[in-house]
Image (tube, rainbow, N blue to C red; front, side):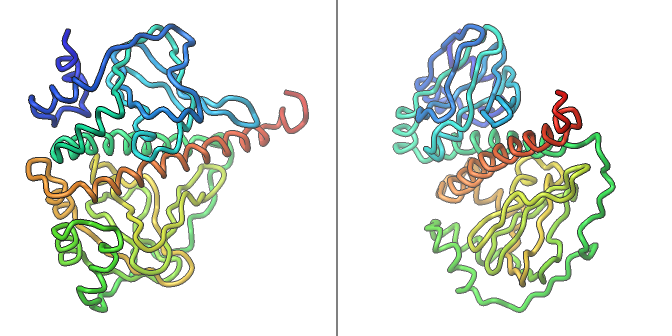
Length: 332
């Protein structure tokens, strides 16, 4: 079967038109792996993304308590895209669990194709953004499983049930400034600055809660925002602290699922710009390419956050092992 036909089995590539799907196929080849074979190792600088055709692949990461299984990849999934995006090295081992066949995409060919065709670049980044967001949501869910057999009755944060917001009318130039700093295109700057809504939160006030529906993403204008998740039996865990120019809340716009974490103004007042789903969808419309800068930023953020939460998962794995009575008593 031709590679272009194999791409039809991947939801991540479903938005590619036939012509660009052929170009994507020209960047790929099929490769088989025997059980136990490494697709790549943690720290490897290779940047090739992969698509799993058959079999399964384990993702593992080393820890003081031994190797930890981050997850199992199944046919139809992409992986390895984070290092294509941020060039920071492989964050885990990828090991064939059974005989498997992959599509391997040449990173240099993909980059050259993207440089020559903004439409191809947008489609590729869209695929990677969705794939990274799916992994990030799964990682958030995995984080919540630690200590789940212990007391999960920790009280919620002492915050209002609903955020108190006010619009003090920042002028357009103040809104434009944060997007200019990100080197967005003139059209992106105009849309985001003119169609965003200013919201202010006192320290400790909730911007959104885990489980809330999400139809807005945000960018921090002033102050700091804490992203956190409740770990059953262990309380609230801070996942990230965001500052000026950082986006958050975008995952719910990708998959239209409830918020996977909470966002709270940290310490002092936080000023954020709320950007409605329709605005984001208009800017990232794959049928009318204008600039890929915003999508590139969102991909970088997703890759960075996935790396960070994977490290947190490993940390919680170690803590949960230490908290197990048999281990703590030296009996296990």
